[in-house]
Image (cartoon, rainbow, N blue to C red; front, side):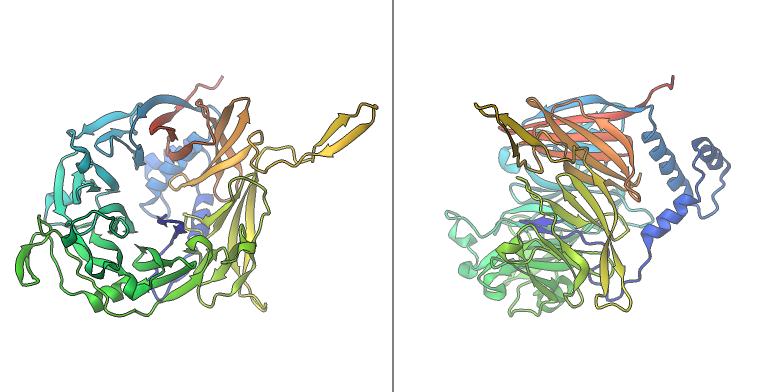
Length: 543
């Protein structure tokens, strides 16, 4: 999910597509699952005999179905097998745990994490700032054998873009980005196809005069690259003279340029259309070009990669909406968006509206009215069901958009199911005895995320096992007890509860990753102390 200073855009599908056919993927997945024999022994026998009535792809699906059932078995326990401390941020991606600013990699697939590689130490200025894991595609043909290697695409502090082998840590490709702006962040435009490098915002005082942008009106730069084969798409500047002086941020996602303004306005533009109309010159990494009358090599110092998409006029936008904190999400079928209206009285209230005409869906106003230190949150489900997940401190609601007929509303928001925290739902009265012996009852007003009550902190989706992973925390004395609950993604039924051994402090930052038979908990404590806890599934013998 791209996140740009409050902007969350979980987009399912291609936003550039003019037509979008409802495939009912969620229903297809359910119907296929119901045809599978529920007995694990029968599934293993069918797998060995090659009995797959639907397609050859069933073997992978049946394997994952077997694993899902094993994970949720009563005698399948998760044990903490490995813990590691670090003074730098810890990152996880697809079975790999990264330490030391991505320079040290561990494989989490083994019974205990094993070190895959450790890159040589480097000066602080050359450290990796951000990175993405790029997997080798299936069924593609490339000229270079290195293109088939899974790689880590990383941007460094001294403006180099590196492509590092995910298996050895060797640098496969390196491209110099230039010195006109510090590129610091990297995210997917289209996952495993194109990615975006984002520079820091407007330059700070003290940089050399020759590096100052013309007029000083450029807020930031966005550089777009194609992954395989590795190639430059273009570098776009976000100029306040073009987009307005109140522009605060921008990002590219699914081929759409999203521009945010300080007044709460969010505007969407077609990046493809902008690049076709305003690209000054097509640039190819490693090849020479004539730039401002001089012959330079693209991607090599000191030239690097210049900005080759410069807008000369304000382009027409595809869509605009006003919302609080630029928080704007797109998803569902047909396209809908979720916002909080840009008025103080609507704080904590979410609207689900159609992208077509901004019309509000029936039951499309979500207002839980929870009293908590941390707000509730809402987002489109990351599976193929086009649903919506709304998380409050004590309740998780999974919602669905349904088309209506013969109604003033076109679509309606309905609840598929809800998951409730284990709490005493009755109001408690506090009883005191006065000096005269009179009994006085006083109702205590507690927060919905009171530490002494079980509170939902994290909700993530495990796509391969089709499980909803929920972290619930309860404060006991001075320690927080956390457990990870595995729920059926289709019904919400609780299938497994995994207790975490380590204490969970709600004031720290936490991240949870559930990947097949592995559970990873990454914790950030004060003074840049990071901890990684790895749990592995172990099947105990049934008594």
